[in-house]
Image 1 (cartoon, one colour):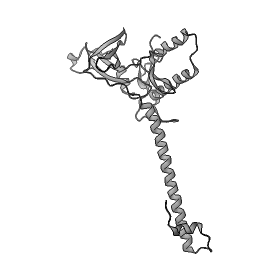
Image 2 (cartoon, helix red, strand yellow; image 1 turned 30 degrees about the vertical axis):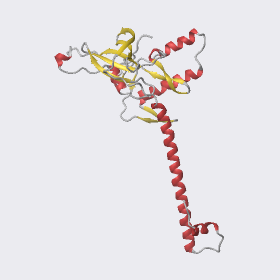
Image 3 (spheres, one colour; image 1 turned 45 degrees about the horizontal axis):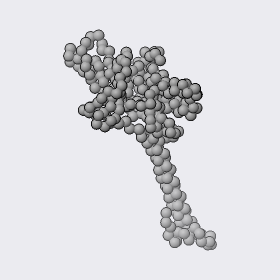
Image 4 (cartoon, helix red, strand yellow; image 1 turned 135 degrees about the vertical axis):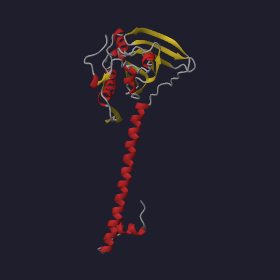
Length: 268
């Protein structure tokens, strides 16, 4: 704030006891100084808070999975045995070399519905797809890239991002083969990542600043239902501390808390 020479004289020049007009003038000058200082301080504080928020949110959203294109050509790199929830394969694009996971999942239809031709209605996507669509863009939850109806009726193809380092169980077995304990920092990092994922699933909490969280409006609590090392994946490159991101996957047993079926899980 710039003061006129007259205003500076009211503040810095010694003088005889001021008149009533001079007192009012002095109060006005001081008031202007204080107001300007408060505005600058508030602006700097707001800018700092916004920068911190952008830095944290940016670190959460930095991971962007490769783009998936339906009309691209893909080759199968690895195929897993088909389980109760369907089959799973690792595929690679012949044009971009991006790698994805495709899961062939099926939805159990009501007894009165045998196929889409009889009902004339499109079957809903599988449970895992419905749950993942509610958790999109969370840093610690697997990204669903696309879901397509397949044949026979009742089957869907789900395309997900690929984590090339295997699952957490495989990593723990590697530590065991090397006869070493998992590093404390790695253990804490895994716990922190899973805590963020579960905080979002259970309560709709998402980090907005380094020590604060925000509630997601109209969030419906989700129970994963099959939390185990087989369903936790390290994702490289990581965004924190030089460690891999911790990603929670396999939502085939997930359900809304209001519709929970009690104790669930799969062997492992």
